[in-house]
Image (cartoon, rainbow, N blue to C red; front, side, top):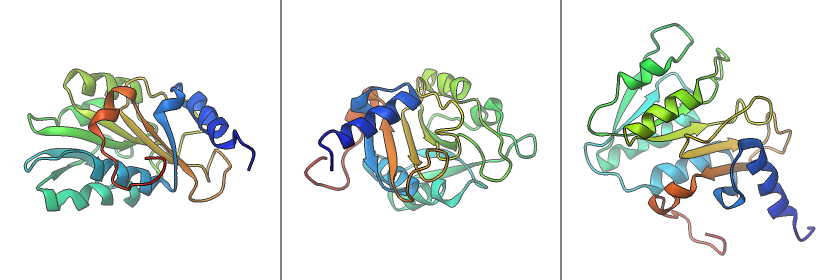
Length: 186
């Protein structure tokens, strides 16, 4: 393996997102990255997460599995069929909402969410924003300025092999995320 291949790959991913090199990790599939986030945060009983119940299972099951910690899911029902409007997300936020976990683009309808508008408002309310970016990364701009976490496999628009993905963790969110797997690069 060329000595800089891993760093260069991380740098390319950072460039696609407008992120910094130290905010990118190379992981396996999207579901693994999302699971790292789900299990790596300090959840409290009664916390809740906003998810689109009709999203691809990789972005629903990791959050459902937090029921063992007393975390509740708030299932988003779009006000317009096939479209998630920012207001649909904001209407579900309450004092116990800790995160919204949404896909950048719905895997069936192809509708792309307004990542910036949603992320900006979530940040103003101190709610974390996790994005499943597999459907847009490499083909559409996938901005992370207002995103805390993003996971995406490379096998779609990045034209990489299956189960080779990236995990973006915003610098400000890194101290909140604890490694759930220990190894030489954690």
